[in-house]
Amino acid sequence: MNDNNPGTDTEAISDVSPAKALFYGNIVKPLIWPFPLSNPETEEMLQMVLDSVDRFLEGREDEFRKWDEIGAQPEDFIQDLRELGLFGLIIPEEYGGIGLSNSAYSRVLQQCSRYDSSVSLTIGAHSSIGLKGVLLFGTDAQKQKYLPDLASGDKIAAFCLTEAGSGSDAASIKANAVKKPGGGWILNGEKIWITNGGIGNFFTVFARTDGDSGKLSAFIIERDFAGVSSGPKEDKLGIRASSTTTVNFSDVEIPEENLLGAEGKGFMIAMAILNNGRTGLGGGSVGGMKTCIALAAKQAKERKQFGQSISEFGMIKQKISAMTVDCFAAESVVRMVGHYIDSGHSDYSVEAAISKVFASEAMSRTANEALQIAAGNGYMKEFPYELIMRDSRILTIFEGTSEILRLFIALSGMKGPGTLLRDLQSAADDIFNNPIKGFGLMSDYAGRKITQITSLGNERIVGAVSDELRDDALIFEKYSLELARMTDVLLRRHGKAIANRQFALKRIADVVIDLFVGLTVLSRVSSMDADGSDQYQQAVSIAHIFSQKAKRRMNQNLRAMLRNEDESAKSLADAVFEAESYLWDVL
Image 1 (cartoon, rainbow, N blue to C red):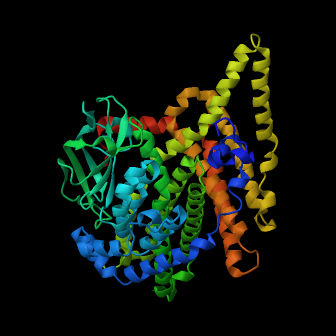
Image 2: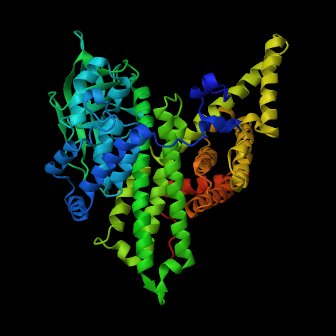
Image 3: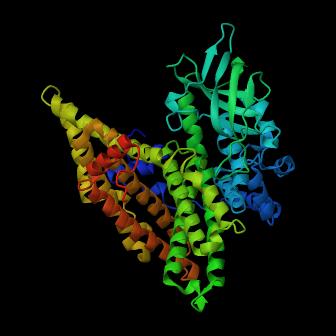
């Protein structure tokens, strides 16, 4: 689909981005209903893997704590991961892997994260991003050469994109690959904060191939290539047992056949890998949340204050409720994005970014609340809460910070309506010179505006939910229209300058996140048997709670688009930047 047409014709449905369509006020129901359930054909295999993970990781809390303190996983543990097949989860069976779908793989990382985040990261950095380039863009020869060793874990993969000074700004990468007259390249550069950097022997590396200002290209680099080395392990706040180092490339000779994808297409390849791998991180977040909920519920029931269990206190119930709603919502959106990837959907980048932002921030909130419920115990190393808190802090930073992804969500979604407005302006300018074309464009735009203002046409979702969820559905129908209206207002007011209005873009992104995540929650609850059971009724309650909270957040964000303290906030920040300190000490 192009960005100007969020239609739902069945031939083009796989090209439609349901999140981008929300910027037009359209809910693309066929892409959200019905909720994607497990495939019975793969359930047996998945359950076998999950059972193996449980048997292998259960009861090893003391070891995980020890490895956190020393900052490394022992080699015999890495070998156990190999023997369990956990490095071959997403590699097709023809290459020696297990061949799990994206959703099933995400579910395995969720299970691993219930025990230890560093374990999930070692596996996830290998599969989600380290080797994903070969799966998505590799030639048949590259797949035949590398995938069997990657599946067995004989080769452990790492993703080498980040450099000093180019964390979120991939376009500022300095690593350089100079083409040799006889074919191949010479690579020089240093990558930082590389997960699996110390234990990996297969690197997906991004470098410039046309001088300092040239385009990025992607390469497959082996540890055995002369000039490849790793720095010392980083001393990190959390996920300490996973390997994080610099990886250095000094006059590394790259064979011609180790170019990954087309030359000059490295940025597109990097973004595709990150988008495709986001459900791994999302699944890990969900697994961590489930552990936090279980720990906090047990702690609250057992801890007595003022003569009663603190689980009887309203504020503790509120915390447990919020943690549960967050987990259910995160699980719903991660599963939906996994389904888009597995079904061959072509445009899911915004949805993947939404799932990463929401799941990572939900995990951070949940870890914080679990520690708060544990109170003093939560602060002590003998209990698991402080380790979970430290491990979860990285989630909103790596694989795209929450701030950068919010800008991406907003600008990607506004691109289509912005193009539509530009076309309208062209039609107005050209209406007398080319009246048929001009009036046609204006008529199309008017039709869209009528659809936005009056109804959601064939995409209304009220009929897809039970009567119990009707009011919740109406909230998302209403605010999708409000989003479209506000998008129109902002684009007319700021034009191209909207790219620099980060306060407004953040609010727009937060509205879209609430809309899309809320719709996945409604879809999931709608997929359940409305049997009146307690579990179903509690799921309905989750949908109610999420919808009402989202309504308040969306209303506040939309109101603040036009009435806010943004300029005062920027002025205050500038004053602090200039002083590089706090200015109001009280003596």
